[in-house]
Amino acid sequence: MKKTLLLSCAFLALTAGIAAAGAGGLNLGWNDCGGLPASLDRAFACNTNSGISQLFGTFVAPAFVTAMSANEIVMDIQTVGVSLTPWWGMRTGACRTAASLSGVFNFAAGPFTCYDYWQAGAIGSIAQDVAVGNRARVKGVFALPAGDSRITDVPEGTEVYSFRCDINNAKSVGLGACAGCNLGACIVLNSIKINQPVGTPGGGKFVSAVAVRNHATWQGGIGGDCLAATPAKNTTWGSVKALYR
Image (cartoon, rainbow, N blue to C red; front, side, top):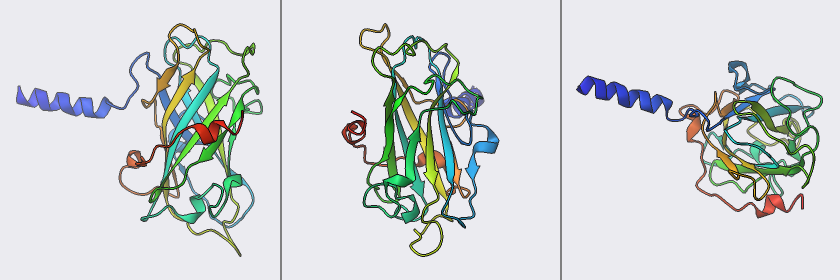
């Protein structure tokens, strides 16, 4: 009996973060959707200031998404050391400024592995909060215009492109470079809120479970548990939403 109980507890611990049927789930990875093993880590030689790295956030649709109009996303970045490395400071006043981080919601040019729900119609933004220690929160809000004909259903179980984060290589090398490009980092997609128009049966959906893998690493990660990268500070949406009003 005791052995059975221990085995049951172990099974629950292993499956606690996996999306339950109908609840949907999150994936995060470099270069494409699906949380595939090849998309886990991004290794960059930090030898150029041109080019970008593309991080894809997707969700497996929960039940009763009948009229998706917007997504709100929350991610966390954690680096090695006691403070966020300067290279990962991507906001006004930080080493690399807000121009180093941008949100893309247009997947018309591919890749085509997952479902392109937005069909080049979504507008919005992604922005980084002030770092707390070695962690920084990234938030995004993006939507189709009210009444847009593209606001339709998403069949349950369909994996959908929610957003792409473009992280440029500015200040990676040479005069004025920001320290830390060559050091490990962990990025976790904590949640995607699926908004639907007011009055839609079932309302909005909050997805926070894992589909395949909701985290990605940079230069091999930070060691230990990547999923522990969750800042203590959780600020408001106002500063992000104001960017596209």
